[in-house]
Image (cartoon, rainbow, N blue to C red; front, side, top):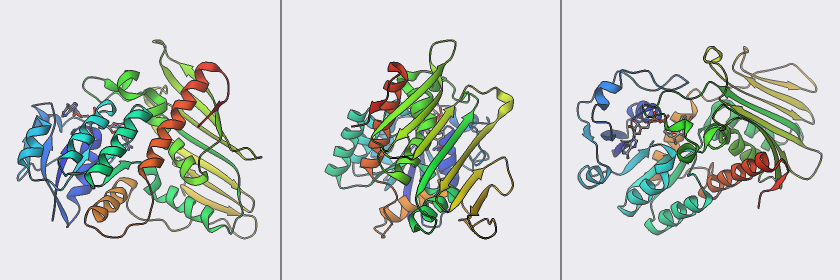
Length: 339
Ligand SMILES: NC(=O)c1ccc[n+]([C@@H]2O[C@H](COP(=O)([O-])OP(=O)(O)OC[C@H]3O[C@@H](n4cnc5c(N)ncnc54)[C@H](O)[C@@H]3O)[C@@H](O)[C@H]2O)c1
């Protein structure tokens, strides 16, 4: 039975808690949050999608406000590191150096240099560090990747991705709106699609991005073209400047030589494959969501079981690198080479 700690018990902490809590081979035995009223706080609604646990039975779970005390006292095999982004590098290093496996939320860190520090810490510890790029495990995105890799519909000619919502407003100290702590919309939200583009098509040679800024001068909307040096057209749009009534939407269109694959949360069925020949169909996808499936992957790896290579630390770092190039492109109004 894996002994698990959840560090940072806001939106994602409660999301990871729900996933761990459903497992037979693991138990959340510790929760660490700087907020001393965290039990009371779990009655507050957080996040922009369903799934974060709210009615939590804290019996058998030790609560800590100090991370080092938790690591020292709780006898943990693994933690879900669901802290604000600016703390990912430091806390990952601290856990790994004490022999604890880490599932750290995305983005890996604010800078490529911090990602390198984390990779070095994982190498040195011999423990597992996995970054929570949940889209790679999201059933419809995973299915699209499988269909593309299988090759029967030919190559990807064009692809568009969208991820749009209102500004994240659930955090008590509103750290999301501070680009120094969250990386802003590009690194926090849009990186989901950047990372998936990398997963599907590899590293782009260059990016060309345009951005819109809010009243305080911070980026609130970004559109990027990922340049692969041939006739492929690949774009992703991410924005958190939508008005509250909009909710949250994510979608993609993949145009292959012999099929179009469409995912759109606002349509039914949400996933459709439109082949050049034959009927439109909806392929069967995994039942669980991407959060459950990424924790399954991590838990199995920690227990020494063989897992497919869905995500590596180098790829997680490279997604931060691509987004950094996107930010430079927004500022310079020029395409920017990624390496
Ligand atoms: N994968 C996804 O779909 C997804 C969605 C949202 C957020 N995220 C990522 O998850 C991470 C957390 O985001 P969130 O929405 O859960 O934020 P949040 O603000 O809701 O939660 C963060 C929690 O960390 C606690 N905290 C802050 N500093 C601490 C410290 N030093 N020690 C202990 N606790 C501390 C806060 O009190 C808060 O409860 C971010 O990196 C974010 O980018 C991922």
